[in-house]
Length: 197
Image 1 (cartoon, one colour):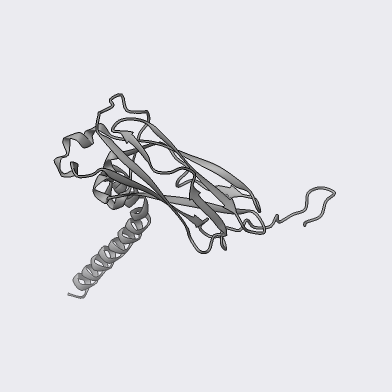
Image 2 (spheres, rainbow, N blue to C red):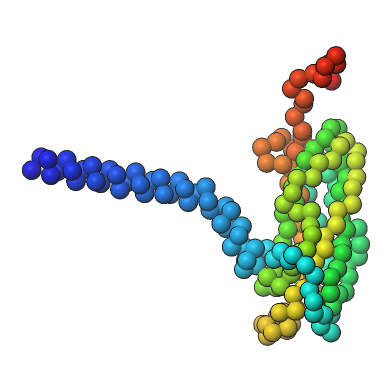
């Protein structure tokens, strides 16, 4: 009886430990899996990624507006460099945003991107974009950042989107994860014959 109880306890403990290990693994995998899910489905306003421009252009025109924000912990100014544009479905468009550092030293930021209305996000395809990659700006530096995109002609087949005439592409810059306000850490060692500033 005691040996049987001991085996059951060991099996129960092994099952619990396996479940805990599985939950930890899922926790680590959840962010990239969620990101992949959003990119594939357009969920949460996340656009798709295209390897090449569309080969088809439709007569339907859509106005694209641009929105920009900066997290309060990042000492940057960030704004669209052009007014809203009207493009045809399937037409490749190129838009620019200007970022300027108002920090007293180098900073690194990363932009997130979404589309509104959310229901149209899966039909907005980026070809090239500055989002989700680290952008480093020196003190006082400004730079133009481009995004190349198109509205997928498949939108023409979605009757639920017949009422969409305007799309907003929105970017928000955040400081690099793990930094204080995106500030770049000081150099740890002096170069040969030099001193740390």
